[in-house]
Length: 435
Image 1 (cartoon, helix red, strand yellow):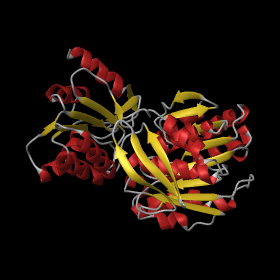
Image 2 (cartoon, rainbow, N blue to C red):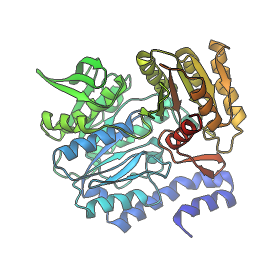
Image 3 (cartoon, rainbow, N blue to C red):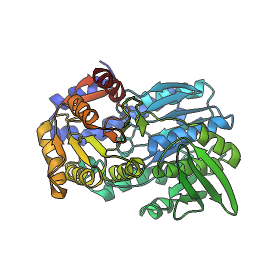
């Protein structure tokens, strides 16, 4: 039997209280044996870990681009993709931090390919389930913190403290010639918690605070700004849109400086990143409207995304979204409330219900939306039809934004039943139908 199947079998035959008690030990066993099998690959490269609620995947991509622009052979793993010495594969596992030996195997492939550096997106559940056990991180980066995965962590403090374990482990892990380094977003209210862990070097970045910061922001065909470091200013013309991506670029720039890379070479890497799948991804069409696919799933990320799109949309902003089942029920009304406040037309639909009734999830979202207004709120449980409806009602100058699935290739619609789902592909099919 494959290791992937062991946990699912155990879940069915072992009483729940017993299963939950032994589950962490099961994951720890896998982490230890995986490291032994693949020779502790996380101790053989410079490892950069990126954690936070939003922006992790984009930051991982940006850091990898920075490394490559400096001639460094690097690998990366994120919820969007894997990369080994320039060879890229989409992540179709629906996991941010891989388990079941998979992360160790991937890191070993990076070592065997001659990679000297690896950038790893680190999820809180990945830390809790010991998936990063045995990896000697050299740099730990904190992007931001807002309520998420509280079905698992129960409280925001537990969620934060779990992420903190990445930083707590820095000073205790194997040294590889690079000072153990902490990098935090100084504009986030939790920055000091992560900053105060022991490390040999510490950096802060932000738009309002930080040792490294951005000024003279201009948003157009390019995102233009200047990075300020000490008394020097470095101009950037990047393809990634939106203010929140400037935070991600600042994190990547600061990481590059922590690695003692030249500012100009770092910026060359930042400017080389054109598109990250499922992150503010535009689906081109001939209807005179903008269609945006994004992975936003929290009220905070909704607010950032919708405000940015509202700023650049001459017409109406039409949102299509749902919420994932079996987790974070408290945020559902807040999602509806934010959408009703910041978008002109709201279409609430199914996302990934897992074992929950999709109608119950949608009703909870609608409850929040109805607190703001009743007009312009629609419910359509068929996600494909909901997307089609949004495109149909959009007129020239409008923007349709579809959130929740982003880069994902599958939807879980009933327990562990998965169906193939590619949001961008489906949108293109709908556009063909509507010609």
